[in-house]
Amino acid sequence: MNSKKEVTSVSTVENAKYKEVSKLRSYIMRSIYLLTFTTLGYSTWSEIFSPSEVWGAYDGVTYSFWAAYATLMGLGIRYPLKMLPLLILQLFYKSVWLIAIAYPLWSTGQMDATSQGLLRPFLIAIPIDLIAIPWGFVYVNYLKHLFKFKLGK
Image 1 (cartoon, rainbow, N blue to C red):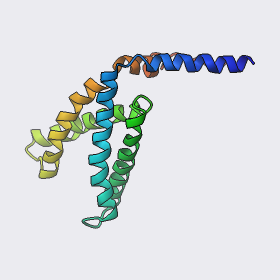
Image 2 (cartoon, one colour; image 1 turned 180 degrees about the horizontal axis):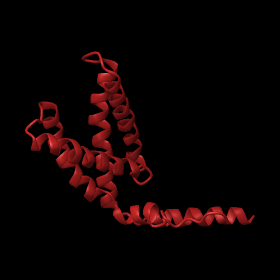
Image 3 (spheres, rainbow, N blue to C red; image 1 turned 180 degrees about the vertical axis):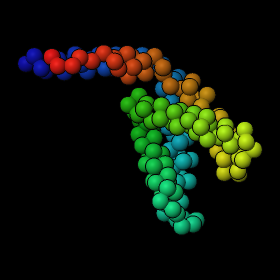
Image 4 (cartoon, rainbow, N blue to C red; image 1 turned 90 degrees about the horizontal axis):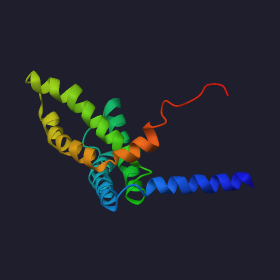
């Protein structure tokens, strides 16, 4: 009987945490999920079903990852907070690419057409992700207790 009460109280606490995010922020997140689901999903699944060239192993991994990622973004349309780690992943991988790949290419004058094609969407997406991600929610649900664990008992 006590375990049932505990489950109810945990659900109530989780629901209260979910309500901390404004409707506007929720709609912005849903818009990002929808945009990614449709655009990235269409381009990657189209390429998977009808490849324009023979792929190497890394190309296959890349397209498979993007197709799966875009498909999961579709769940974010319905469950924006539950799929929030996908937006954090998007922010992180685009930031890493800009800092570790694009900047060195640009600074040495070696940026090719493919990299230039990715540059603008990434530069636009990063500030949008920074605005859309509910950082208070991220802190409370992911970071606050990250280092508060006990070993043993």
